[in-house]
Image (cartoon, rainbow, N blue to C red; front, side, top):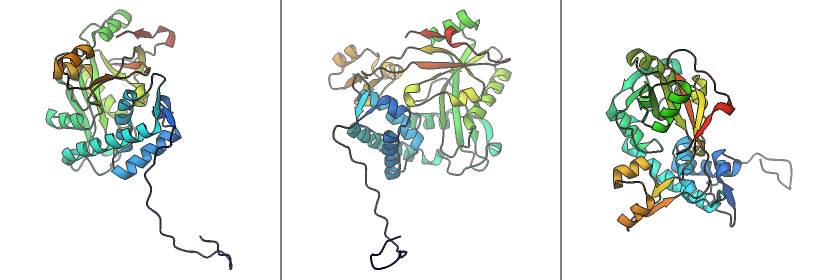
Amino acid sequence: MVISAAGPAVPTVVPRPPVPAVSPSPGARLSLDDCRRHAPDFADLLADAVRRHGVPSRALSVRTLLHLPRLARPNGMVGRGAVIAELNRNAVRLRHDQRAIEDLIPKDKYPLSDLRFVRLGNSEADQIFSRLHYLRSARAGSVNFALVDPVNKLPVTLCSVSPLEWMRVGRQLQTQFGVPLGAAWDVSRVYSFDVAPANAISFLLSKVRQVIRREIPSVQLLTTAVDPNLGFVGASYRAANWQQWMSIQARPYLYVDGIYASPRQLRTRFGGANLVELRAANPRGRFEQSRAKLLDSVIFCCRLRGETEPVPEDDQRRLRR
């Protein structure tokens, strides 16, 4: 609507200008906490990157949150321009990863009741986790499950489960909760596409609990680690009646040439995860670690038989790395 000085308002079609890219404001900074919470400043930058690159918002957010600690000051502040650059860099990589497995990405939405629960082959699961999961890797030796669409049989939501390897967690489960070593399995990877209906992850978790209880009777407990530094709060696990039982002290994120690498990935690729040794042995590589204080990871658990008891906050142990 345009107001004319010569008369009343006259409807006028005005061409919509292109949406400009968000440009950094000199001196402006965001905190890691603001980014985790999707405060308006970060949410606007994220939405702009999603529009321009055509990538899923949630996946881009998680990837960017994984890499921002590399740029953050010890007080957790990151320059606005650095946030924009990191969003764009991760959007480009995400789009490249999507194109590499385009045939496995579901396009159509279906209600939860139409999805089918299946055991997923390693080939499909490994491709999706290695390309689209924020860690960009599959856990070797896992059993994979998925909810697939009824037409193309493409995974909409999937997860991998494997014997718990985190011995510090395993020993605490044995000491405090009476779960024998070897009787706990870990949900090590979860990925859900944008077309997944509400509650898809919690529904998948409940199905996984049923099949493992039936087929692997020696397993008594499922565990998973939730990293709040990536914006995760464990809502899907709570909805599936999992309980928070303990936490794990945060350790710095590690990066190779600006790309996140887990200690497991560093050991596989370079034979070790000690940055001093890696720098000495690989002078051309750029090995970094985050400096800002990170939030502890949270361990959620689910008993396979009977109810999973809540643990009062005062009784939850904080484990050291």
